[in-house]
Length: 108
Image (tube, rainbow, N blue to C red; front, side):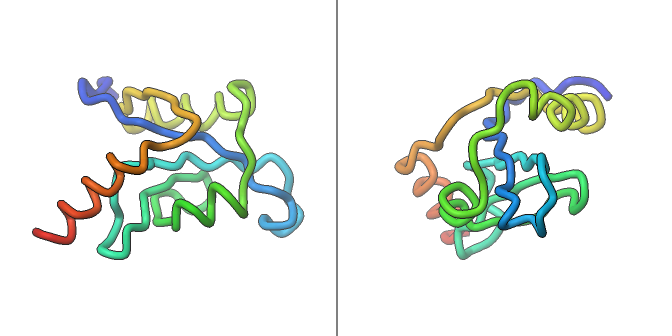
């Protein structure tokens, strides 16, 4: 697939075994500025569930730990080749920017 010209910010995280039914090394891509619904949940992607929604604070602070570049390489490649994503990898989101996007969705 042709690579997108739009840059998409992404945070790659690894589920803690205690929050992933004991399975190790499951990686999730969290799109911190792609608002999924009016509650402010964000879009995420993982191999088993594809695109879906997640509460940012819960998935970042409770369910996952940071994924290394090596751990996230397979999912990153899958998203770039299969969907054409052009990523900017981040470690955390800017809360003011998130609020701006969330308010824009609510006021549509």
